Amino acid sequence: MSDPKHIACLDGWRGAAIAALLLGHFYPVPGINFGTLGVNLFFVLSGLLMTRILFVQKQPLGTFYRRRIARIFPSVYVFLAVTTLAFLVAGRDLSVLELASAATFTNNYIVPDGPWRMPFGHIWSLSVEEHAYVLLSLLAVLTRASRRRSVRAVGAATAAISLVALLYAWTHSGAALSRLWLHSEVSAFGIFASSLVFLLGLGARPSRWDWMAVPVLLVIGIAAHWWSAPAPLRLLLGCGAFALAVNRLQHAPQAVIRVFEFAPLRQLGVWSFSLYLWQQPFYQLVRHEGMHPALGLGLSLLVGAAAHYLVEKPARAWLNAHWGKPASARPQAQRMVG
Image (cartoon, rainbow, N blue to C red; front, side, top):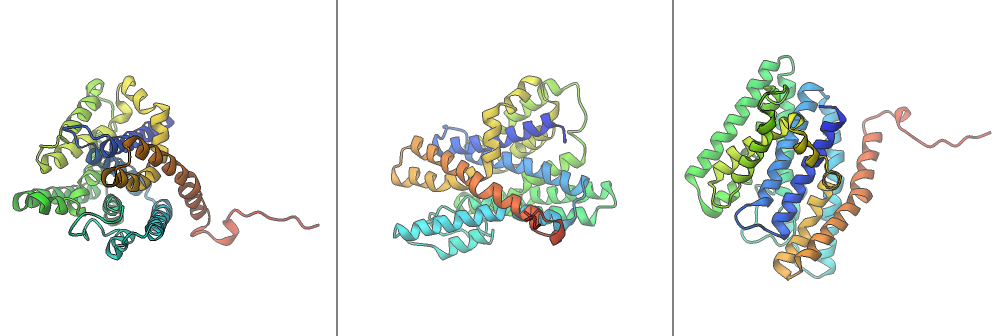
């Protein structure tokens, strides 16, 4: 997992995820829900990476939480602050509920009755990830002494999420089901399914079917995101296929690996978190204010890339270098006094 080629592939996977989401938002393709597909690609990758950190590297909880906070919180709160300020300057109505629920990572449960006034609706997926990280980390600590217990615990969580999703789909429909589908007890399926695949070792060893496994799994995952596909099929089959695909990516044919190592795709992957945050205001301008999709997409790429270098990267580096370390261990510039 640590070999550079595989890491390059994973950056490409991130790039594919954000590219799918941008396509779904700015140039939607009839039939396929590329926005949801992109989010699910992110989820299964998170499940793989977090499981490796928590269950294999056994990173201490304090370190794990600090690094997650350093990666996510500065970018999110700068985005919320700048967007709120822009709304004030433009004289637009603010929604305290939307701002508060986004800032507390609860807006996958606290959803406005009508359309979102502010461009914070996409924070729902970050809320799901934060909730999943907490549960995964607790399971890792509680089962650290036994790999078998870890498999059972994550397997039980994955099964429970599946049952909840099926129950919601059985008892609700339409807008009510769409709201429930944002909840962590449903949408975290991709994260936990990928975690379970990793713990079971289903992606660890080469197979005689590797020449076709990842391409076929990707096709199945994409097909499951057809607009008319039942929600449980999209979640369980689509995310399940993607979970297997990302875990087996290192064994994929060279042609597939080269696609995920394509430099522009990898660069999108490096920028993906900031791009995900900052595309939403421009998506709303395209959708509701008549902005041209090409302009909205271009501004999303420009502002997202700038935010990566101006906010995400320096804030993360500074917090990781200084937070939780004794003063003597922190990097510091010293003046030589003669």
